[in-house]
Amino acid sequence: MENKVNKKVAFHTLGCKVNICETEAMIRIFENSGYTVVDFNEKADIYVINTCSVTNIADRKSRQMIHRARKLAPDAVIVATGCYVEGLDEESARQLDCDKLIDNAHKNEIVARAEEIAITKMGRHTRADVKIEDGCNQFCSYCIIPYRRGRVSKRPEDSILREVGQLAATGHKEIVLTGIHISSYGRDELVHLITEIGKIDGIERIRLGSLEPRLIDAELLNGLKKVRQFCPHFHLSLQSGCDRTLKAMNRHYTADEYRQAVNLVRSFWEHPAVTTDVIAGFPGETEEDFETSKAFVDEMKFYQMHIFPYSRRKGTVADRMPNQLTLAEKQKRVDELEQINDSNTSEFIRYYIGREIEVLIEESDGEFLIGHTPEYVRVRLPISRYGDECINTLVKVTGESFILS
Image 1 (cartoon, rainbow, N blue to C red):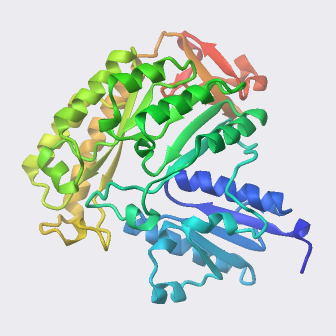
Image 2 (cartoon, rainbow, N blue to C red):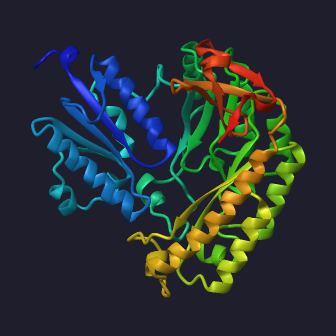
Image 3 (cartoon, one colour):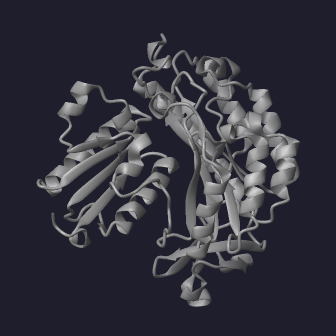
């Protein structure tokens, strides 16, 4: 067999932050085994496609990337892993032009010598995603992920802290705690974990991924606010502002309970960022239901909304529901929500004009330094004024010396 030092591996990742995090772990496993990681469009000996299956479009893109890899290097080993792989039946798997399929539970075996998925360094980034749990027990009627990822599995705190310590030692300043359903980690456990991460030298920011609004209470927020590095950026999954639609989705809260959670967050911080996900055109969503949802998201004044047209997923409850909307109807509703989103985002950002803000500088595009505020507002600073030495540092800027986007 050829010496691994001369081997090249390329990665392409689709989907969520968990997939991104797991790809980084697989990259480290390959590097530790002597491989060189190259761009996906370059010739490589092995191509790894970390797939997604959250929508039909994601399925199609997963297949396209497998085919692209085969076209780039017909003799290369093509490996597919991730949620799309989890859902393949035997016949579909045979039709893929892929040499190896690896389910999510065995990504750590993508290189035989690796005993576990662990990131020892991620030198390309100032910010690092760290997975704290996998799986989901919620079974929302539109979602296939619990069937693909399985039940909730929490990662031990000591394992997480070791990884964060390694990341801090390699210069990382910001940690984002991610998972499929991180609310399942538990309120008290999350507060304790974030408190302990805050004690690690070098860590200047800590963020949370998507949370369920039911997790939000005064005890949680009190605990988070005590941690200096915690960023007041809350992604609270909504999906709809209409109670009838929420019930059909099997979401376990009402619009008013969601409103109370947002108001509580805003009572703890002066200008926290609250972002969300919204599905437009769920089966059976009437025009009246949509207008109710639209009025609710306008009232909430989210910093940003991720808006999706409903996508049918075979194997889910929603796929079998009557009154499926047309693509044109769903897109019309997406467009209306996007208008609200653009307006509310602009309003949120205007708050910072003329104020002092703290920015973690992450990269340079040659003309500007680019970074984010604690609320994850993107900021550009002219290199001519600040210099490249600011990369991977926290800087405070005021007034017209920055550009918000």
